Each structure stands twice: as C-alpha cells, then as structure tokens.
Length: 118
Image (cartoon, rainbow, N blue to C red; front, side, top):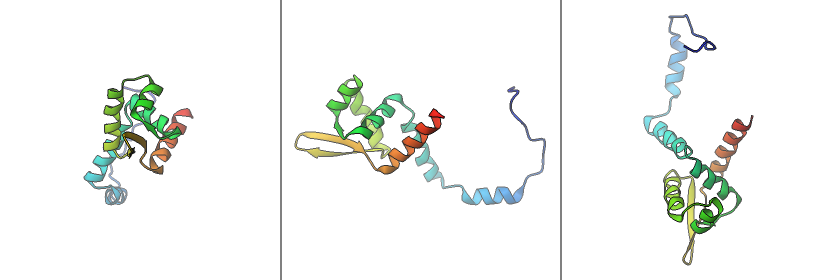
C-alpha cells in the first residue's frame, strides 16, 4: 500500500454533495466521446502529427518525411485523428492537405503540454 496516500476514515455519505455531483455528470454518450478523444491523444505518433500540424497544413507525404515514417503509417494515424475530429482535410487537385480540425484541438494540446512541462 502507498504510504503517501491519505484515506478517509468517515463512513457517513454526504448526500447533498453526492446529489449535486450526480446531477452534473454528463451522459454516457458524452463521456464515451470524451474517452475516445483522450484515446486519440494516447499515441506518440498521433501527438507528433498534431504537433506538426500546428506548424502548417501538410499532405501525407510531407508529414511522413517530417516524421521519418511511412506514408501508410501516417495515413492510418490520420484516419484515427479524423475519426476523433482532431484533424480535417481539404483537396487541392490530387493533393490532400491535413490541418487541425479547429482551435479547440490546439487549446487542448497547449494546456496538456503546459501541464507536463510544469
């Protein structure tokens, strides 16, 4: 058992607190979506792709070259990121460019980066 943890010795449930918290818990659907979002952030390659896309909109070839990875590996991770609504794409002729889906992605990433740097 961890020595630095504190344990509550109280056995009385604080019903007013429990009621307030229960009323504010999001739906299972929203919590599942949130879980999927964090899963998408749970892979170093995807984190690298997101960081690269902070800098510039890029095609798969450019991302693969930047990260020294295969195009198929990048494409696979981009599908995951797109499914999580973290990246979007646009076509310009034969080229497909990827970018961050919206400013929320940068905000989430920036806050997490700030947290780990502290």
